[in-house]
Length: 343
Image 1 (cartoon, rainbow, N blue to C red):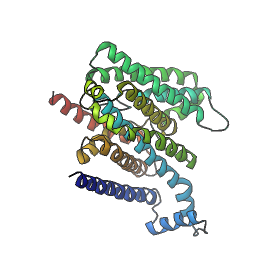
Image 2: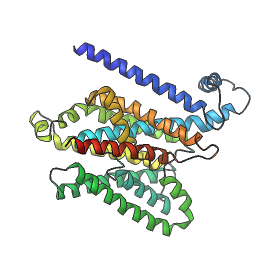
Image 3: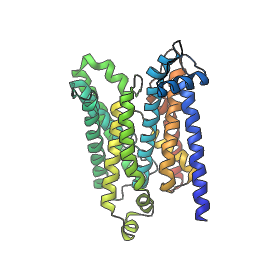
Image 4: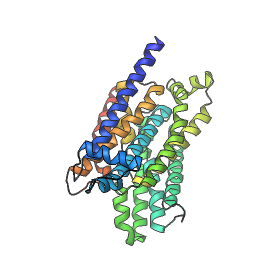
C-alpha cells in the first residue's frame, strides 16, 4: 500500500511539473509581441550554449525582458504558496496567509520605509528594502499572534483574522504618513504597493531562488511536525514534537520568505491563501505531499495571473497584485463561508 501511495505521489509531481513547464513556456512566448515556441526555444538554447542568436527583436525581448520576469514570478508564487500552506498547517487555520494575517502589510511597511528614506547598501542595490521587509514581517507576525493570544487563548480563526485586518489598517495609515513626507517617491511607492514584477532582473531571480532553496528546504523538512500539529499541540507534544522550536522555526522561515518576496515584487496578496486550498483538493492534507505540491501550484497560479495582467489591457499593464486580489477576494469569501458553515 505504501509503495502504491509513493507511486501516485510521483505521478502527481510529474503532472504538476508538466503543467508548470507548459505554463512557463506560454508566459515566455505570449505578450505584447507573440513569439513562436520554436523561436523561443532556439533563443534560450543558444544563450545557454553561448551560440550566436538569430536576427530580430526576439532575443532581446526574451532574454532581457520576459525570461527574468517569468522566473521571478514563478519563484515568488512558489515561495508565497509554500509560506501560506505552512502557516495554515501550523495555526490549524484555513484562512491563514501572509495577506489575511497582516504579515505582508508589515513587510510592505518596512520596504516603504527603506524606499522613502533611501536605506540601502552599495554592494546589493535592494538589500536595504529586503532586510527591512523581513524584519517588519517577523515583527508583525509576533505582534498579531501575541495580541490574538492575549484576547483569545484558543487563537480562534475569527480573532486572528480580525486582528490581522485591524493591523493592516494601522499599517496602511502609517504608510500614508510616510508617503506624505516622501512626496518625491509617491509614484514609485504607490505602484510598488500594488504588486508588480515588471523590470525584474536575473539578480532578483537568483536571490529568490537561493532564499526559496534554503527556507523551502526547512519547511519541507518540517512537514511531519506540521502533520502532528493537525491533531493539536498537546498531542504533538506527547508524540515527541518540540512544539516551541517548530513554531519558532516555521514562523521565522515564513517571515523571511514573505519579506524577500515583498521586497522584490511588492504586495501580492492572496497567493498563499488560494493555492494551498486548490492543491489540497488534489493531493489531500498530508503536508509531506501538500508542501511540495504547493510550490508548483503557487508558481502556476502567479504565472497565469501575471500573464493576465500583461495582456488583458494590452498595451496597458495591470499590477499583478490587482489580479490576485480580485481572484483571492472571491475565494476568500468562499472559504470563509464554508468554514463558518462547518462549525
